[in-house]
Image 1: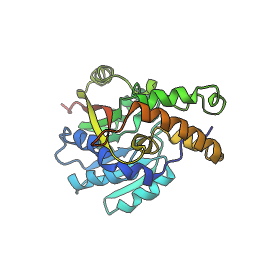
Image 2: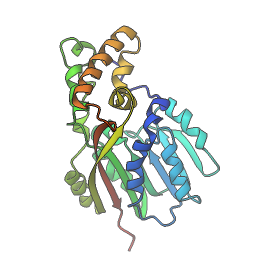
Image 3: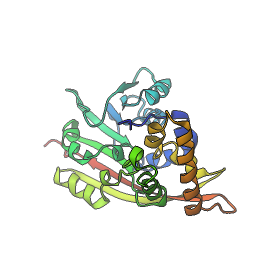
Length: 266
């Protein structure tokens, strides 16, 4: 199985409205009047990085991602003060120049042990600088438990065992609060469950094709018949877990947010 999923920006952006909403809610709690340098870790297709540029047009903003496909799409937003670069969050080195704001949107669930990286990232902030992130917190939802169970079923275990599970990577809100407070930050941590209404045929499947299903689609990319078989089984499970209603399919989605401000210099 491929170590890293191959991303499809077009599929990811099919639900851009729902995917962008948590970022906007995170951004609303960031109090950074005039940051000079901003880093967006896991910028993806660049659409939310562009929102950073809209809010702080005088800031030097760099979006980082390890997906060539996402970076190709993101560079459509590049400008004099907005650029994009290849980097992996697990090994990202901020460099000598400090940042006033580091943002990460729906990335850290893909980075096991990411909380251990917080000290280095906070050290990269100017005094009084801000680190803000949001991650999915829905790994106990049917969308994920059904995927993990199917990957670990006798038919698929040999090829896909473990491909559906990332729950250990994401901490509970209280754990994030404790970690950030122990590092001397003033931290604001919260969670929200969005009752997203999705439309169309197999809409939850269409959603996860852009995110959680990517490792499986990557692993089976060289075997279209097996890929169709797996997706068919998974679609059946999703229909049972998320039945369509008269106004669409309700897809509850829990998110965990944190905004941490580094202590100002005395």
